[in-house]
Amino acid sequence: MPTLLFSRPAPVVESAPRRRRRVPFRLLAAGAGLAVLVPVGVTVAGWLPDEPFAQDVVDRSTTPLVLALQDLHEYHAATGTFQIVVEREVDTRYVPSVISGERVEFLATGTADAYVDFAGLDAGRVTLSADGTSATIALPAPRVDEVRIDPEQSHVLDRDRGLVERIGDALGDNPVDDSELYALAEDRLAAAAAESDLRDRAETNTRAMLTGLAGSLGVDEVEVRFAEPTGNAG
Image (cartoon, rainbow, N blue to C red):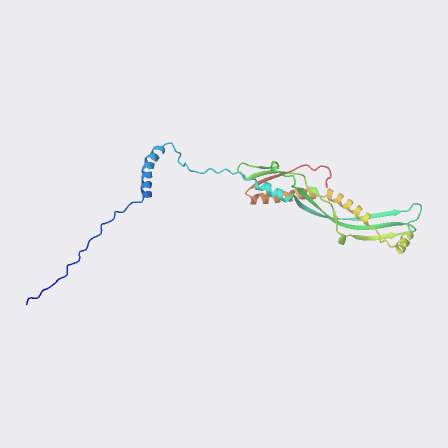
């Protein structure tokens, strides 16, 4: 009896159709833009400047030197220490000093500063060169401040009082008042300070300070001019 052989049909493989790669619309637009810009750029290159997008810098900043001076207000440029012996005598008419009267010797020590007032300083008093490397500064004359008496360094050297005053001190409750001695000593010390070289020292020290300050801000040459002092201003 014959044998029947059955064979399975071979599977048919169908290849999927290839998809076309689409170019994004944005790339197409950019390419079209470049195609347009290239001939236009070649056309306008003849009248554009070498650096059409260069930046211009305009410096409108304030002068740092003026601001630094305004912050100082007062510059105490020199200090002097002065000492004086004040002798004060009070006599009673027609009465011997051993009966009534007083003589006092008072040693007073005090200090006084010479300063420059920067409160009214503005840009009109400071002149800078075009390149900012030199400056001229106009300042008021230095002034001598009030005298400060040092109570620890001031005392009565000698006090001679009459009999009436000594009895009054023993019976009274009020201590000896030396306020007039201090007031007189302040006047004498202030006169000594005004006649000293404090103002000259203040000018010298102020010039040195401003030269150093301006140098730290890039100003190499500084000329400082002081006004003439008016009277014996303190």
